[in-house]
Structure formats: C-alpha cells, structure tokens
Image (cartoon, rainbow, N blue to C red; front, side, top):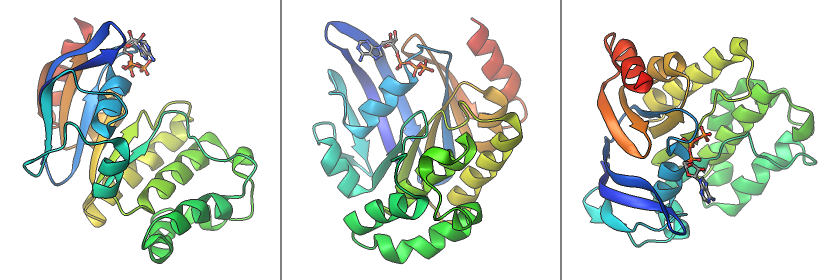
Amino acid sequence: MFSFEGVRSGYGRTEVLHGIDLEVPDDGVTTVLGHNGAGKTTLLKTVMGLLPVRSGRITWDGEDITRLSAHQRVRMGLAWVPQGQKSFGSLTTRENLLVVAEAHPGGKERLDGVLDLFPALGELMDRRAGLLSGGQRQQLSIARALLTGPRLLVLDEPSEGIQPSVVQEIEEKIVGLASRSGTQVLLAEQKVGFALEAADRYAVLATGRIVRSGLADEAAVDAAREALAV
Ligand SMILES: Nc1ncnc2c1ncn2[C@@H]1O[C@H](COP(=O)(O)OP(=O)(O)OP(=O)(O)O)[C@@H](O)[C@H]1O
C-alpha cells in the first residue's frame, strides 16, 4: 500500500496540495480525476519525490519515504510516465527501449515480456520515435517505464493528445499490465469515462483537495462527474 497522509506540497510560496489523504492498494489501478489545474501533476510529482512534502507523510508498505529522493524511490520500484508521450524523437523505437533496458538491472530480460504487452512496438522497432503516432509514442513511453520493473507505475494523463479510437487500446493495456503483470498503477486523468473503465478505485481532486473517492463501479461515473461539476 502506497499512502499519502495529510500531504501538503506546491511551488515556491504557492501551496497546491492542501492536505491530501490517498491510499493506493497493492493491486489494480487507482485513478485521480481532476480538471486542468486541479493539481494532478503536482500530486504525481510529489509521489515521485520531485517536489518536497511541506507537511504530512508518504509511506510505502509501512516505510516512511517522505524524505527520500526521486532517485531512491525509483530504486524502490516507482516509475513515472510523464504527460506528453516523452521519448527521444531522433532515436528509433529499439534504441529508446535499449537506453532504458541497459540502464536498469534486469531491463534486457524484461524486453520480450514488454513487447508481448505492446506487440505494435515490435513492428516499429526501426522507426524513429519522432515519426510514431501519439498512441504509439504513448505505448513506447509506458513500455520504457515497464523495463525498469516497477512495483508502482505512475501515469500522467496517458489519453491526452491521442485519437479517441486509440484511447481504448491504451486503456486495455493499462488494465492488462495491472492484472497480468501485477504492477500497481496510479493514473491521473481528466477523461472520466476512460479512467473509470481502466480503474478499480478513484479519487476526485479539486483545487488541491480530494473531494470524493470510492470504488470505480457503475455508480462511480455519476458520482465522479458530480464531484467534478462543483
Ligand atoms: N512549476 C510550477 N510553478 C508554479 N505553479 C505551478 C507549477 N506547475 C503547476 N503550477 C500550478 O499548480 C496548480 C496545479 O497544476 P497541476 O499541473 O498540478 O494541475 P493538473 O491537474 O495536472 O492540470 P493539467 O491537467 O492541466 O496538467 C496550477 O494552479 C498550476 O498553475
């Protein structure tokens, strides 16, 4: 269980997260929903240790990691896929994968399993990442993160900038990697339908506070939309 207890963080003098309580259990997908500017990326950066905690604490399996650096958290098994399908555009798909695989113990051994999850990438190994579609680049970003062998994969708006027809494919990949490979997923999203299809649990973030949370069951779509409308 990864958990936030009363976490406050922000930038300079501006506090963005005003005391967040959030639990990410050891299995499945947890989504944080919120509009532009709600604080989703700030929350994920705080999870990763890229922003310091001003008060409150973060624990992972009971261990207090509040003061650990991003580097230390990555070594413990956190991996981040930032917004915007980031990869090295002038490198091929293969080179993008190998850069990560070679930098992490066990990375090369994970390559076949990751390509099983993203077979489309296998067909695009010699294409430059800059020439891939948004959906293909998103798959490459997630694949790169998986090569590090994470216990908790943190995804920032993976559906952003992707054609609606491909969004469902990304959703299936997220569900698949949580259920098949046993990786915990924390997903920040604006698209309620997409996120709740993929997720087991949700929390709604509004102006830096969690205003609703629960199981991502049938009632969740209306409950989350209502919370987002306030
Ligand atoms: N580097 C920064 N310095 C100062 N303020 C920032 C910085 N990054 C974000 N903010 C502010 O923090 C608030 C939350 O932003 P954040 O990016 O976390 O929201 P978000 O929910 O991820 O939005 P989006 O969906 O647009 O990415 C906003 O008011 C934003 O202007």
